[in-house]
Length: 188
Image (tube, rainbow, N blue to C red; front, side, top):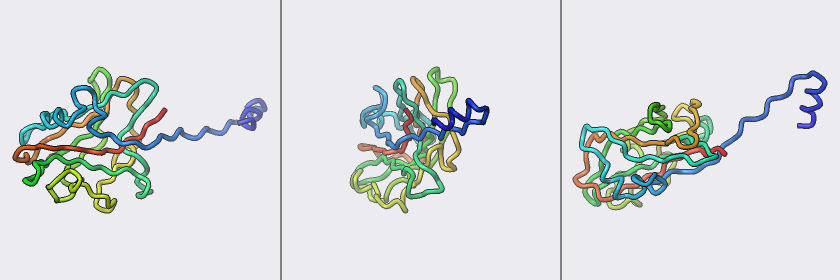
């Protein structure tokens, strides 16, 4: 930094500061805004087959910025992995398309980040949420920062939202439990 200052004083171009790196976290149901922060509230929002609905949202607090995903697709061991599951215990899974997006404060602009089928994010065991979750990264769906291709997406700042929209393909008989763990990058 001192050398950059001296270089500037002498008319030389300054070197660029490195990009500020974010840190890993993951969103779970309980992180949601007031109408989206319990399992019962989220289950009640799961739509009928063929219908799309808002499943969950999180409003970013002051002095922070978020984006869906974590890490780099060129470094598979250093990226986030998705788990999302809704099931009727011991009967069947709900299967649907999940759309992760960024939404501005006024809800007039939405930027899709990643879309996936939730059947690719859990095991085939329908007994409990714990048995539906794999710890093997080779069986999980990766989500690097900015989406599957690691493309830069705008960060979601104060009062804007991370949102999850869900389109049901096949409804579970009667969803009685749901959970997710979706990676995010937090920038301060």
